[in-house]
Image 1 (tube, rainbow, N blue to C red):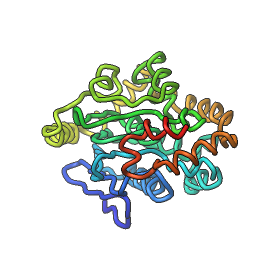
Image 2 (cartoon, one colour):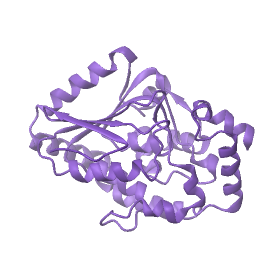
Image 3 (cartoon, helix red, strand yellow):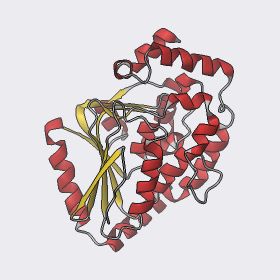
Image 4 (cartoon, rainbow, N blue to C red):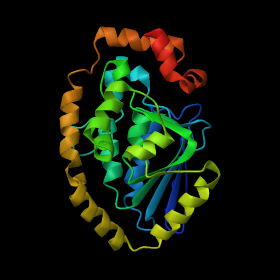
Length: 283
């Protein structure tokens, strides 16, 4: 299958592996351009019987995906418009719908990580079946509490299933930035791989998995989902949506704080490289 007409994604497929490169500089921000394209790709690849493995990576230096566009804090209607083409699961918001769609793909999904991924960027990675990160060059967080909300794109469900309740609460309520050593120890990522070896490692793993039959992949995913509670993700996302409704649309104090962050450099390359410090100074 061909994947034309994408502007924020570059997609190639060969030997059963679809390579999806986030190419939306300067930050791979999950905005009104990138989110709909990700949704459109997921809808298409789900029906592509020639693809058995999907690898998502970034070609933006220093960022896998920064986070969801913070301007949606003051634009709930614009945020909900990201789901204009969503079907079913009407109780879920557009980001939750995207994460559930990724988790529901028949293919194996792999996130190849390098750079920073916060908030929705981290949710995008945790929605995939596996995560491999460039050691010492990858940092991740759930930053939403700094914006006066909670993770609402699956983060409360996806992260908790990976690292457990105490550490998920630490990450969500503390909103700190985690390096690969800690993320690997927590189970946030499958493993940290030396940066110079990451491409070859993921390519070899993807090729071996792509050599399996679709029936093997489907059977393994179904059995593991049953063992880990992954088959109840939609129910958990519904509860997350209800909880998010307590804090979003955001109160004025949170909107004012987000405006200060944007004025101080949030969503600029320089500001995002040390975003926690930017937020601390502007809070």
